[in-house]
Amino acid sequence: MADYAKIFKAYDIRGLVPGELDEGVAEAVGAAFASMTEAESVVVVHDMRASSEPLAAAFARGAAAAGANVVDGGLGSTDLLYYGSGSLGVPGAMITASHNPARYNGIKLCRAGARPVGQDTGLAALRTMASAGERVKAAVPGVVTRQDLLSGYASYLKSLVDLSVIRPLKVAVDAGNGMAGLTVPKVLQGLPIETVPLYFELDGSFPNHEANPIDPANLVDLQAAVRESGADIGLAFDGDADRCFVVDERGAVVSPSVLTALIATRELAREPGAAIIHNLITSKAVPEIVTEHGGTPVRTRVGHSFIKAVMSEHGAIFGGEHSGHFYFRDFWFADSGMLAALHVLAALGGQDLPLSELLGQYSRYVASGEINSEVSDQAAATEKVRLAYCGQEGVTADELDGLTIKSADWWLNLRPSNTEPLLRLNVEADNDAILAKVTEDVLRIVRDGD
Figure (cartoon, rainbow, N blue to C red):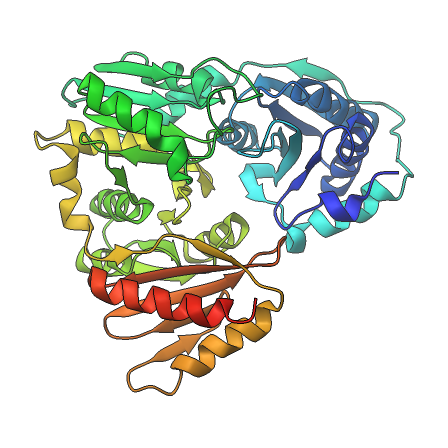
């Protein structure tokens, strides 16, 4: 009997295959999803993992049995699934475990128009329906039809960014054996770009490195390729290609906060005064730069379902996260690593400076990156940090997502993990000395006694 409570996470479904997630579970979820959304049609896309195609077929069987017609988009990235959901106006499912190891798989879901499905927006109800074991079978089952979405996806992305006047660029791309190996060649086709490909072969066993670019170890090969080939820029994607990280011409990793600021200024030039969403772990340079360019910065908690909801509420044109997720109003408020990459390529190719110089104006502070500490009592450790800092002159705190403490020349955020006994610390400061002191002091408090 599947443990639905274990595999249903905050934003998606994820578990070990076949021990926790198998075709029976996928079929039950497909049937429940079709019933919950009362959809006439749903679209299903899957990644390159060995288990993904069978799980996608099982999900489609369940949805069809419940009466929904199924558009089978075949292999694709998560943002290709969002394109399918948005352009067709139907709910969708992406079979992927993103950057997780090969033994995992999962299901990401969205309502029509790529609207998010999270715990508070249908995922909890779906778990109840799928685990009940009582499937509603339609008098007339739906049919499954294969449809190519990749060509339309590539054309649509390129319609959102002006790439007509970019100079020739050499671009190193690390697909990590994930879905960017399929989508990148199609999207870049016809552009004045010479690609230096790394690990474009679709292989869900990830033979070269994990498809998780937020871990610096997984960017080493790309950094070397950029330097050795003389590339103008390097792009790294995660397994389902919804996240993008960038390396400059020197091989230095570019902060996603810097990319958020860059893309925000481009979108504000197109629509002055628009709202820009940033999560509370992005650099404070982002709201500063947004304000300087006449935009309205809106701060939100971490997580795509929160970002998308706040973007919709404010009609925001763009949103960025520290984790390499970038969201676009004109892409149904959904995230697309490839669309973010096109914005960076357009900015780089539209002028003559190297990437490092172009981005210098968007990098103002130094940051620790995310530091995890295993803590037995997360609440108690967080309270110790609060007591250590709150009450000091010029220090403020809020609890939008975990604990954020701000001072004139630094800020920190301490957030508990949803799934592990971890506290995640991020610190940003005006200089390296302040950063080192605050980080060291907070870690000493957090880890004391654990």
